Amino acid sequence: MFAIVEAAGWPIWFLILASIIAVGLIIERLMFLRGHLIAPPALLNEVVNELKQRGVNEGMLAKLAASSLLGRIFAAGLKNIHGSHEVLKESIEEAGRAVRRDMERFLTSLGTIASISPLLGLFGTVVGMIEIFGSQSAAGNSPAILAHGISVALYNTAFGLIVAIPSMIFYRHFRAKVDSLTIEMEQQAIKLVEVAHGQRKG
Image (cartoon, rainbow, N blue to C red; front, side, top):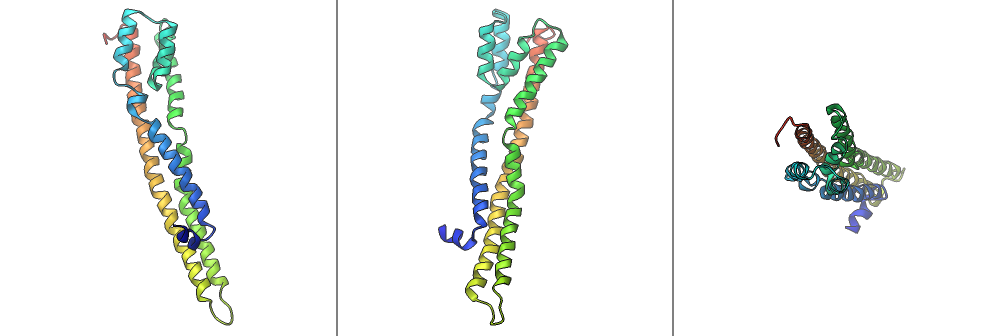
């Protein structure tokens, strides 16, 4: 591995740094964006039952807000349960925007890495080409310098693509996951609003 890094030259270190950051972001988002933790399937029924049996209290709201991101949305709405339908809906929408921002955290950074990695690879390719043309002299080309320049050019191009492709795949996957979870939470929040205002039995 070190021989490949050595052959690729100093431009490869930018790509190595980008790959380390990308792997860290991907692992973090994989751990965070788990559906059963963000929007537990049974949470709506539990909240509706609690609402019917005991009503809303500070302890219930605190526990709900700490349980999950969906719980945070529910808690924000239930704080305004005695307000109008519009106030309740607005508080849920505000909490929903904050929750979506949490789910989208680091995705911009991952998308940026996916976009710039091929450019970093191209930069390494250009450096390799400069070394190749810089090695030319009246006496001819030095085979060792020529080979090194070609190695720098090809390794950086390849490694740039190796970093960019998985980063872009995971970026697209996470964006779709966030969209899916957002829609699911919106639907459950609407059901809670309807139950809270007696428009739905649960």
